[in-house]
Image (cartoon, rainbow, N blue to C red; front, side, top):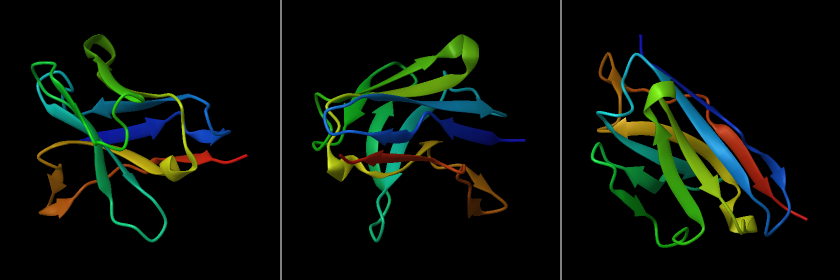
Length: 119
């Protein structure tokens, strides 16, 4: 059974850093394109970063130079290293595959991990 478990979020001051983890089971993170999304209160979920099966990476303009996506194939885990955090980075962060995992025709999302950037 597919499961995505995000962790590593928390409360951090502006300029601080966090590393998020996405532990996957039921799928292989090294053969799938893996994405990090975020959803801020009252806003739509947005794509933040992607790592392809070949290792190529892409980032939203708003996080370029500050966020780094990576993966550990042995641990079947994808990471999002975030530095120079800003209040506008506050959101619940989720990981998923490309295409988004569907179970019984319904999109599957993990529980996410809350990131709050505030002084």
